[in-house]
Each structure stands twice: as structure tokens, then as C-alpha cells.
Length: 254
Image (cartoon, rainbow, N blue to C red; front, side):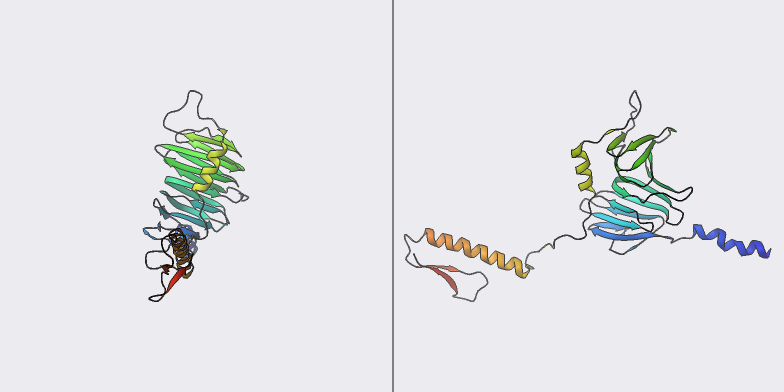
């Protein structure tokens, strides 16, 4: 009895809620984590849901060093990630994600990404996956990965520079790997790029000092040009300076 009772905590530990999977490293609003606004350094746990809107993106680092870059209009669930045993399971409900995966070295280790109609197996590679309109698009940038259509037992192997599209209509010869057009590869890289930070957006009435100076300089330059053009009819043109005290102006003498 004592032996059985002593093992209960050990048996239940792998299923414990709140097991850490990684953290959020970069965010472009609007992005959500479990229906709350995602923030940099948010802890990522098992079964967490990352969701982005049309203007949002998010990048997360997993505990084993792998990186997930989620594009806009996407929903990705981190079902499981155990860095020590290298057991990773992800679900892409829709949208696009780039997975930069550390090489699997542990016995029985796996990195698996599921879409509604395919399963992508990754062994230390850089791969793009997208799901939209009942189609799964997989592009292998580097390394090698496998793509198994739902309900099939035969996987399509992708090498670096290859891609495959899994749809509801099976081609006569089955799904086949093909070379990725350079334009497609570049566009997918851009679609999942999540920079560290964005330039600040200056709202009305909140212009920074630099932008104010640029604005003043631009208006003054326009005023000078207008004064010179009108100098044929005005011997002394006074162009008001935006932001200056009353009666201060830039006087242009022909």
C-alpha cells in the first residue's frame, strides 16, 4: 500500500496542468494568448492557444531552443512540449506558422504539427506550414520533413527547397513533392517574419520632437518656395513659421 501511494504523485506529474513549454519572445499587436493580449516574456504552457488577427503576429521560443513564428490571421495550439524528452505536439487550426526546430536527438523524440487534413513530422529543420480553404501547404526551407495526409499511411518526404499542397482532391498520381518557386519561398518567409519591434506610430497631437522638426522644416521649405515664386509681385514676403511665437516669420527678400 505504501509503495502504491508513494508512486501516485510521480504518475500524475506528466499530466499536471501548467507545464511550461516556453515563452513569448516578440509580438505585433494584435495577438492573443488564451483570449488575453499576448505580451513579450509571457510564459507559454501546455495547451496554450496563440491567436493573431489580420494585423498581428507572434514569435515564441520553446524550452528546447525551437522557434515558432506565427503569421497574421492564425491560430496555433501548443498541445505539448517537453524539451528534455523532445516530445512536441502542435495544432494549426488555420493560418500560417514557421517552425525552426532543433535537431531531434532523444530516443523516441518527435516534433509533430497537425492541421485539419495533414500531419507534419519535423526532424531538425526549418519548415513553413499554412492551412486555409481545406488546403495544407508545407514548404521545407532546410533539412527534411514528412507530410502525411489525413487518413493515409504513406508520407511525402520533403527535402530542402521542396513543397507540397494537401487538398481534399487527390491527384491521379497522389500528392507529390515539387520544387518551391523562389517567389513563393520569399513571400512565405515575409508572411511569418516577426521583428523585435516596430517603429512607433505617431498619432494626431502626439508627434515626437523629431517629427515636429521635420514637419516644421517641410512647411518652411514650402513657404520659401512660395515666397520666391511670388517675389515678382511682392517685394517682401513673410512666411509664418509653424510653432513659432506670434508675428515671427521667415522673411524672403527677392
